[in-house]
Amino acid sequence: MKGKLTDIGTSTLDVKTMTAASSLEWWRLSKVEGVHVYQVDNAWHADVTFKDLPPGVSTMIGSPGSYQSQSAALKAAVRQLSILAVNDKLPQPRPREGFRWFKFDSVEVPVNAELIETFPEKLAAEGYTDFKAKCRLAWFRRQLADDKPMTAKIFQSLDQDDQNSIRIACAIALSLGVHQFSIEDGLWSEFSPSEGTTSTMRM
Image 1 (cartoon, rainbow, N blue to C red):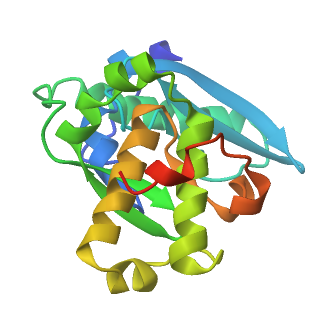
Image 2 (image 1 turned 180 degrees about the vertical axis):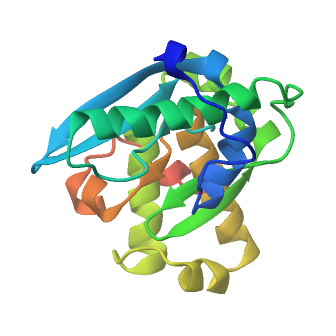
């Protein structure tokens, strides 16, 4: 597919979320791991996946649309790869600068990038898992949103301590490769936290 790259001029990737916007500078052709072309309900899609990105940076660009044929999906993927090739010419970003964004139900929570960078080694030493990270988020949803989806309105109505606790929980999740948490991922009642988990939820 790299042999089919085209001149895209000033075209850029179409991003609709802060999560994607903060990942743009990291998405480069040199970091592409592969292109996943697949069919769902008679429509074709093409996702681009990445490797060797800093914690908290999204490792996938979803298909820009659905297509009637496999060849059309591949053509869309080539266009995305062509844009990523241009990004390779830009200066390398600094992993500890700026923000990463975690999608908690319908709200995107900003997390300091430097905070995420400090977690992986410590979490690995403690045996902290992505399941525990999701458990923590489910607990916050139960306590602060009455088991309903977390929204921007609810998040903004919380006091600073609760907002910071959620940001830390999101940072932990991002450090473990979890980039979003929705109702479909589970309610608090669906998790079985180990003894002592609830006592440390507000760390």
